[in-house]
Amino acid sequence: MRMSMIEFSYFYFLITKNMAHIFFQLGTNQELSAAEISSVFQTEIEILSGNAFTSLPQQKVRNLFPELGGVMRSGIVLGEEATFEEVSERVIEYCIKKSTIGKKMKIGFHFSNKNGWKKYGIDLQKKLKAAIRDEEFSVRIVNRGPQNLDSYAVPKEKVLEKGNAEFYFIAMQHGWAWGVTKNIQKAYEFANRDMKKPVRDMKVGLMPPKLARMMINLSRNEKGELPDKIYDPFCGMGTILLEGLDLGLKIAGSDLSKKMVDATKKNTTWFYDSQQDYSAGGVLGDDNRQPFFLRDIFVKDATKDFYPDEKKKINNATIVAEGFLGKIFHRPVSEGAYLDQKENLFPLYRQFLFQISKEKIDNIVFGFPFWKAKDEEQNYFSFVDELVVFAKKLGFKQENTALRYIRDGQAVGREIVILRRK
Ligand SMILES: C[S@@+](CC[C@H](N)C(=O)[O-])C[C@H]1O[C@@H](n2cnc3c(N)ncnc32)[C@H](O)[C@@H]1O
Image (cartoon, rainbow, N blue to C red; front, top):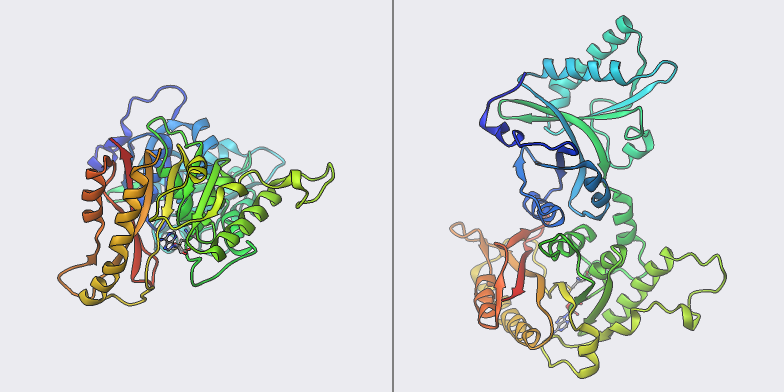
């Protein structure tokens, strides 16, 4: 049944032949994930029930999906129904149509709402089993118990392969949208870069690779293209630079601390090495196998003038960085504690922006700190607005409203700002 509710209005796009209704399952920080999708696909999206919807060519989604950091799955929307009973009928029809004699079709179910499995999933399984008896087609449901498949189980169970399917159900305010998953995040690759890099430090290396990836994606131009080179002037352990390398970008990085610069060199070299094919002989450490980017990773106080040799390393790069967050708080802070942090950090960032304004750098994606407030009247403390006013005086404009990212159990988050030279 076609629906006329406002929430489905976006479905009524004029769809050309190769365009499909696409859903994206957003990560925990929905606003940021949605901004990333808009930046990568340069398209308007609508967020409903924790998912983003848009209309795009399927091939384009397939090609660019592996570059995303904040999206767990994507797929095509096949229909909208008023009740789950109708959804169940469509799913059974789909299985009958797609299953082939002599081959068991493997299928999975995914409910985007919490109680979907309990309320509808078990019943759907029963209906499907009854239909199998009547129609003699062959399917196997791969979910173990009434729960969604995670990003490890999906490839393992092969549900995205031809002839199989993962059905994706999205509860809307007045009915259901349903479809099939086409792409799933390679979560283990992000986890590997995070956990297996040779130098880690829980005290400093708190930046999640997926956030780093999303920030790089926010630096794309209006055609959706990535920059040639990114520069992180607060590179720490190199989390952002590792994501840049994985996307095939040139990288430059610096940090006040030599220890951090060494850590970044080790981590990026490790990653570069893991991507190379050394079967032709030679080992890492041979001079001619030195990763090309090591010369662009250097010790530097980001509030100081850049020397000519440093300028060469960073010219025309796009800055993607997360700055020094100050003291790590796990509980919301008082105004006094915030002002203490501001006293140290505001001048640091102001001076940094001033230095950068003198360089050949036109684009900046930066994560500044903000703090959860103890005070009930105020949710957050942040000096980002003041910094943006200053950046405007230096010749930059702000492209977005700041996007906030904060992890559970932490009281300091990142407020992500995109600045472009006017
Ligand atoms: C939050 S960490 C960055 C984390 C990094 N994005 C990562 O993933 O590992 C901030 C870094 O800023 C560096 N830092 C602090 N003050 C600095 C300054 N004035 N110039 C350059 N780096 C600075 C610190 O040494 C620290 O490594």
